[in-house]
Each structure stands twice: as structure tokens, then as C-alpha cells.
Picture 1 (cartoon, rainbow, N blue to C red):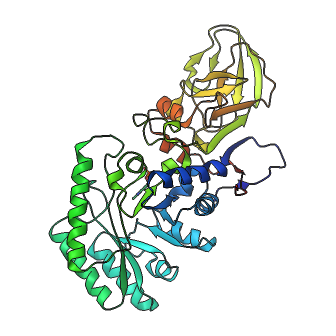
Picture 2 (tube, helix red, strand yellow; picture 1 turned 90 degrees about the vertical axis):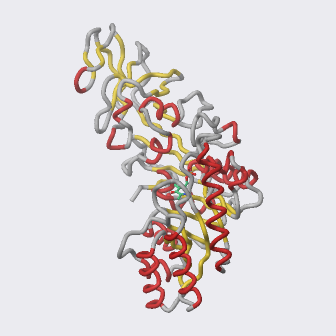
Picture 3 (cartoon, rainbow, N blue to C red; picture 1 turned 180 degrees about the vertical axis):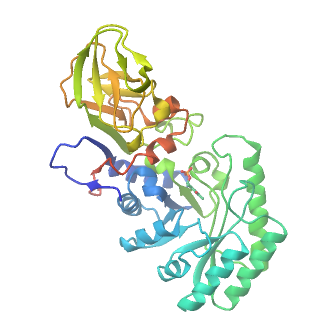
Length: 389
Ligand SMILES: *Cc1c(COP(=O)(O)O)cnc(C)c1O
């Protein structure tokens, strides 16, 4: 489990500072963007690396009516931590903890007949009706029930179980493939098919509490997709789903995580000195090197070797040579910051530091992956925990 620190007493090697006031403000901003819908805070994978329980609590305080996770284990952990209200999870495999989920009043997603059979059996055994949301594959081609005969069979099966009192169909839902590419023809096609599949289920007698398809990019750019509930993940953490859509500031969002470390060594080296494994960087002349005590074990992408940006002493420096498991080096160009000086890898950007998006570009990936991969060896330090007036 990720170590969490509220008020660090000893100096830390490195830390991911999590600004809960920014997270709460992002929840309010997103709710204002989708005023007719409830908001689900998606806190899967430790809230994209930010810490699930703290972020879930802050999101609920700021008005999130639902929490969403991928796995049932994640959902059950939130309930055990005392989180109230609606919690939904959607990634099930055979033999999953259906009964525990039913007993914990968690909404479970069902994409096929095997899952309907397992949840029905678990609800019978528990003597409590399950809260089941039927997932339609409207074009993502991943999880979800195919339209046509598969959907008709799933809807009929769920309605039979509902009539027996074994479950309640609480939701009808789907997920977009290309919502981060505005105008992509699949967006309108998925919306149209979603309306058809919801319409069919409702004609058959399904009365869902919520119908939902919007993730962060759709919440930000496709108002038609908001229905009763929007499921926001990355935007909660103040990161734009894609630089093509805009910056976080364009949407009134503020990045929540700042990742920094303290230089473990500063030293003079001559020109022609190889740096780090493989000597892929060779000092162009006499210079100073700073040792940053973070590596790929901490989730710093090795693909950003020679490329990743770091703010040291008010200047952007670049990773010199390879990122190793626990450490990497920056060329300080002759500057002599004291050992222990702060090196900021990414943050909101307003102190001149790089952003998670900058690291995504340096590593050839998306900012989602940059924050989510930050490892458990990096303590999370929570700031602004107190609710603002
Ligand atoms: C992760 C996830 C989301 C949130 O996606 P973002 O793009 O981070 O907002 C929503 N729905 C489902 C099914 C997901 O898996």
C-alpha cells in the first residue's frame, strides 16, 4: 500500500505532494460543466496514483455523488475505509467477490451472461438484491455487451432476475473509444447506438437510476453525452485528457500532484565524462552534475532517458543519460546548488516547473500514465486537507 504522510517530520528523499484543495476545486468545476448530471469520481488504481481513500473523501466532500473503480477489490477497500454512498466497479472475472460486493452495497457492472449468473447466485446466497449496471459495448470493442442478440439476451435475463427480486438494474452504461479526438465520427456513432440500446432496455421495462457514457474528455467537450452521470478520472486530477483538447487551465482545472526530490549529490566533473549506464550522455565540457534520487522503480519512465525535464534552482534541466532503477542525473551546466536542493519533476507549472504532460511527451506516452505509475516507494504528502469554506 502507498505510504501516506500528512506532516512529514524527517526530510524525505522524494515526495508526491497531493493538493486536495485543487482536487475539490476540480470536482466543483466539473460539476458546473455538467450541471444536469451527477458526478462519479473515478478513483481506480489509487486514484491514478494520488491515493484512493484521501482523494475519494475529498471528492465526496466537494459534491461527487458516486465513486468508481475498476476492480471489486478497490471498491471494497473504499467501503472498508468508511466511504459512504454509491460506489461502482466494472472489471470482473469469474469467481470474483460478488457476494462481498453485494453485501457492501456496491454497484456491479455486468457485460455478459456469465457475470449475470454469478451475481444472481451471490445475491441469492446473501439474501440481498444486487445493484447491477448493464454495460453496452457501443463501439469501444473492449468490455461491454454487444448490441443485437447479446444485448436482448442480457436485458431479458436481468429483467427476469429483477422480477424475482434477486437484483435491481440500477444503471445502463457504456464507454467511449475516441472522446479525446473532437469530431471523431465514432463519438456520434457511439452516442446514437447508446440511445438505441438504452431505448430498447427501457421498452422492455428497465427503469435505471442512471444512464452514463461520458469520461473526462466527453464531460469536457460533448455536452450531449452527459445523461444522468459523468465519470471523470483524469480531469479530477487536474490533467487534460489530451493536449489537443486544451490545457488544464483552458478548462479551469488545476493539477493535483507535484513530484519532487532532493538532490543526493552535486559534483564537478571534467568534459568527456560518461554519465549513467551505457554512457549515452557524455559531458560536453567541464560541468556540474546533480543526482536525483528517483528512478524507474518509482515510476519515472525509462523511456524519458535523455529527455525528461526537471526544475532545479529555477532552471529547466534535462535528464542526462539513462534513468536507472533508483536514480538519474541532470547536467547543471556549472551551477552549484547545494546538495539537498529541490528538483521538481512536475507540478501545476505555475512555479515554472514542468508538468506531467511535459513528461508524457518526453516519454512518448500520455499524462495518465505518468501520474498513475508513480510507485509506492514515493510517499504521498497531502496538503490542504481541510475543507475550504
Ligand atoms: C478509467 C475510466 C473512466 C475515467 O476515464 P478518464 O478519461 O480518466 O476520465 C471512466 N469510465 C471507465 C469505464 C473507465 O475505465
